Length: 610
Image (cartoon, rainbow, N blue to C red; front, top):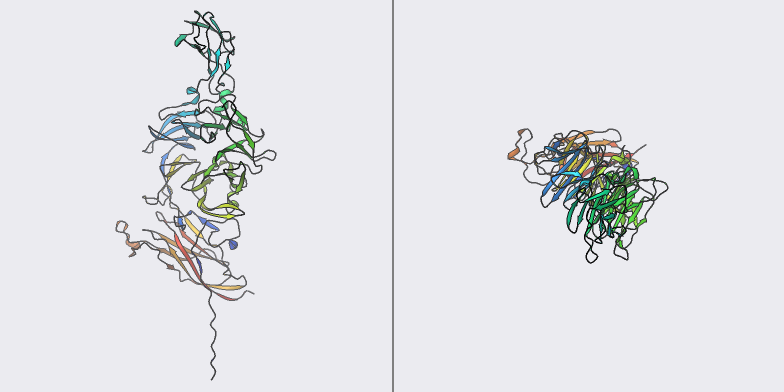
């Protein structure tokens, strides 16, 4: 007697997704890798790289007008946070109140840097200094250079320091011969301000001890100063001569770059609309001294300097897009034969230029900036001066480059991520999640909304931002009360899988069940939607996934769960005779975190599509 065994058709294994990366807006939804999402909102990778809902933010202050800049000074005396709102500058108190420091700020984005225990602010209108107590124009405390030394009374001597662009004040020192009363300065046309003199260490006053011929630049003492001993200058004359446009060169700057070769010894200022391809270098550790000889024309006049980056011992200057000039220039440091510092400039790569000066930031020592073609990195090594520009935002460019007003974008780096904000949207690159593509490093990106940032500031391990309507906000830490709301409003977060064809385009499929493993939280929930080629946004399950908590007892959603491990949910909902299937996991509830570790889709394959 023969025995026959009827073969049992093997059912395909479930589709299991348990390794997750970022978003991918670059391809059709059917072509996206299952580990990425073609449409995710307000999600980010946690420490284990699982998708979780971002935290929200709280309003810490409210001003009147656009927040153009947030600035911080920390020195041995304390810490201060300043807010540039409208045309005024305020100190942000711990209570959240805003104490006005000054008016007359420019209605434009501001930048700042710290050097020598002081904060220096640039807004394109007035270059200012804040010392922790007072905000004043830097011109008021500007360094007075000694422009001539070793001069005989009749004039001459040796050029010593260059004129300071910030101030008309300058000094000249002489070696008196014991008989001459008239001392000739190196220039005429002096200002009407009082001229002062120090003779052999004693102060002398104009009108009492000497007279001044301002047109000729001559100082005549009533009594001849004593003869200099051992060729040491013993007469120092201080005077003022205004040169039209000098101070405006520095006051008009909006951008800065700190550089000095191996050390950060000088600041370079740029962004003056009247001389958009020029930058000016400061004195050694002195941002109140800008020699009138210390300027550089960077490339052609037609394209503006957009920002600075620092990599190894090289300063990189990026310019805006243009069709005729290089967009990258490299500045290095060297000493001449007499030990004087030089900052030679060489042309770098041509091509992609910057579009937004507020987007220059370094992520893990890699300078990033926004161009018309996306986010680019300046890549190079410490052993060569070659610097290449590498595209780093291909997977988000379809959405990012569709944003209007890219020139208004702002960026920051915080806890290993690059945040790029424009039009209320925020594109986040995670330096912990990288991969290689076309021989270059790429980041995983995430997309957020309701982040109307006009500027950013990091302070004490927290990220602050300002808005166009005058708010100063702070992103919450996950453990604090109200961490999952945006200024009181709920946060919508979701993750959408690609459209799955389950390995065949020619047959119908039946989805028999979907299992999701959400992350455990004291209070959370999930909505699970099915999308197919026939229907969209079909709610398959809505479930609370709370843990038992005496402090937040809610009998309307009571739970006996106490162990903090993922609890697998099964929808139990079938979807028959479909060609494509997509899953959406969503949470939009107030004060609810959300995340998941795994998605599993069980399916069968049916007949051919005819």
